[in-house]
Image 1 (spheres, rainbow, N blue to C red):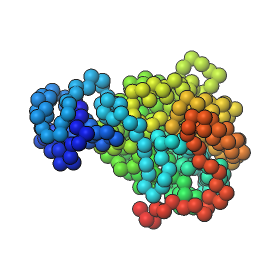
Image 2 (image 1 turned 135 degrees about the vertical axis):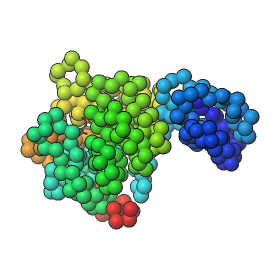
Image 3 (image 1 turned 30 degrees about the vertical axis):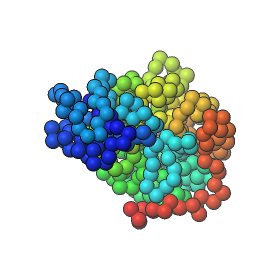
Image 4 (image 1 turned 90 degrees about the horizontal axis):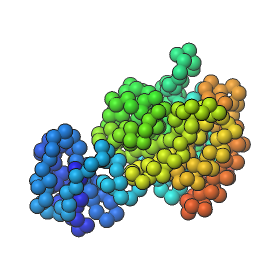
Length: 358
Ligand code: PEP
Ligand code: MN
């Protein structure tokens, strides 16, 4: 159920409605919008009587939500969600197309710093890199764990990049939350419900990747799990799904971008690296992703892809990433959006809050 407040409803009205919801044993999710506040109600395995709220001060309408997802839905919030970060003016879901770039895995301090400098110069505002890697083989490189996270935190301090990195279980999430700016939930964990709930209790924004064979509804329900715990800063990521096609690693489903945007207020970005698995297809699909209206891109870049410990074949050389940025910058402009400009000396640009200040 969803309660739409009147445009002139006061904060006290909203507070009273939330208190009534909580007193009945449900959870209230207040979502202020440009015109009015809507309050989502979750936890209702049992039916709630709409009459309970009809006569309360400031209430305009009580709506029964028939869709299985509530908090992710545009019914609850008409305007696009813009995800913001502490101590940075970078956003996901605003006018600027967010670009996240970096290696698949953090392999060493040198590798990470070299890549970070390149992607920051080209205009990326977010640095990606796994410290915990979910690998198909248990014998493949599994990531540097906390040592990798420490390198990532240093990169934030040095280049002013926001850090996006994956948590593979509740234990790693505790650490990722401490060091990173955004918690990535990988495709293989899209339906790891206890991990989704844990991410929902975090105060850091979450990047939720689409499962390898997830339908749109399953994808949105996974986001609903995170939001139902109170974390409303969720960014969806299309990263390709498994199909019969074998000319690419996965089939990048760009049609999901407008499909999500129709149903949900959450931002959606595209990962053409895992979506194609092939370096030569990453730039063309990045162009297409921006053209289709994606709110951002997440791209694998490696200074020496042939020696990468994971996903070398889909990792761009740094100069290819520069070219990609130049191209998507022009495409974004056609759509009234922007991509951050190159930065001559990223080491001089610092986010105000370095790890020390957190
Ligand atoms: C990654 O981003 O490196 C990754 C493992 O992605 P996915 O979960 O989409 O496979
Ligand atoms: Mn990867």
